[in-house]
Image (cartoon, rainbow, N blue to C red; front, top):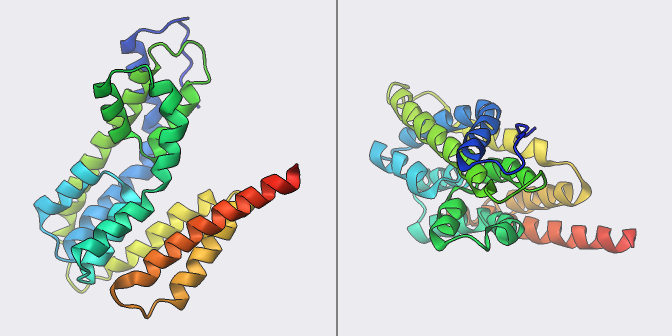
Length: 239
């Protein structure tokens, strides 16, 4: 729930700190994933600076986990980049939703806020634009995104540090599927999302023998298509 802002037109400072405060409870779920990512990446042989670079410049948890899994399988760079692109396609929907609010802003604001617009930041910031004056709401969005980005960098660094002390025989890679299960289950709230998840999972399992984890990529594309088809079908039925 967003922090209540009493001012009719909140100042940038009030908006920024309100956004930061509203993001803090979500960090309880984000920080453990950052720790796991850092440790997991180290366990598959990614150099510490490269691991931190993932969080600094990619800044997309699910895409980072998939990329690390592919790197562990010695997949070519083009496969890793394609996987990140496919997994992050959902960000186009976030951009479309926030575009009317960002349109009046200067380009430097658009670039900054777009960079910080992750799943958790979008979930928090999008609610702000339905409450009161939004003249300075972009400062609220900056507060949510910057808080999340900072926590992700710190938790990744801690994961790198912890990962260096974990024995090679420890089955840390098993944390990867467990992490995705934990991320997936809360999102299964309607028929399109369930249909998308089931379709993607079945295709990925059936094509698991393909080289370079291509079954995973094909499953992701099929899942997205299946979810969109079911969503449109449900909308037509409701009409």
